[in-house]
Every structure is written in structure tokens, then in C-alpha cells.
Length: 98
Image (cartoon, rainbow, N blue to C red; front, side):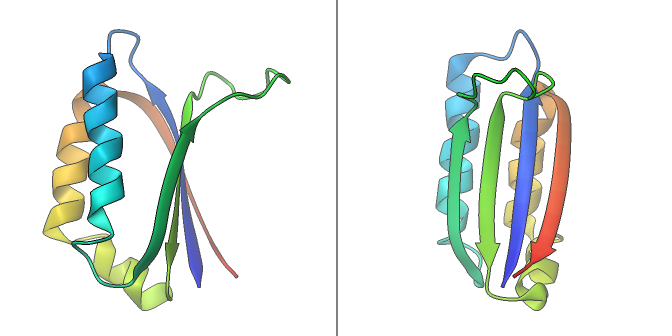
């Protein structure tokens, strides 16, 4: 299994509606691309203040490395990136095997 983790910092003027649409698209992608076991997301609630202004996280689980490799160039992933791009200030992508 591969975990694909995104730490997201939205632009200050990103609307709540645009952010909500983004996460709805993340949730629905698991039904559009095979090999995605789960998708979850949330906003930072840590009291430690060490998030470096990253406000949201997306946590995806893929059945294996091949599934992640299939996802990266997939047209539905491109749709996600196109929707996220205009409201994104910064992103960290971190993958690891379990």
C-alpha cells in the first residue's frame, strides 16, 4: 500500500466555496480511478502552531505503487489539479509505502 499525503496552503483570497469544491472533487475521485482505497481530508486543528501556515491535508491510500503511478497522469487527476491550481499558494506532496 502507498500513502499519498498532501499538505495544502490556500491563497488568502480563496473562497470557502472553491475550497469546498476542491475537497468534494478529492472525495469523488476514488470512484473514478481504480486503485484508490480511500481519501480523507481535514483542516488543521493543531494547537502547537507548527503547521507553517499549511491549513489543510489530503490523505490518500493506494493499493500499490502501480495504482499511484496510474493516478498521477490520469485525466481526472488533471481536473483536480486544474481546479486546485488557481486557489493554491503552496503544497507539499509526500508518498510512503506501508
